[in-house]
Length: 100
Image (tube, rainbow, N blue to C red; front, top):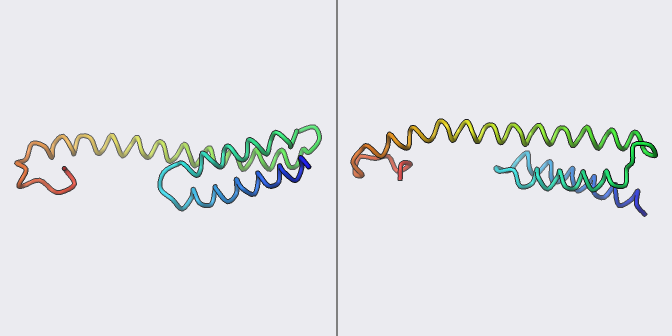
């Protein structure tokens, strides 16, 4: 039954979202996006407007989390790179272990 399958995909997406909130990286959040998109295939706006809206709202929340994670990574890389370049100016024996 398509409606049951869509609910299963929604539940899977919810579980992946919760895991993604607790784990580092974005793999689980990306998997949640795929599950929510799959749920939307069987939740057309015209037939199930409330389910469609709930799914889209949850999907928007995951996209926000992904965007924040990606921005944070870019910011960290920008901050990390100059420090790493500076680290390499020091003799190996005097470098912090994080520099290697």
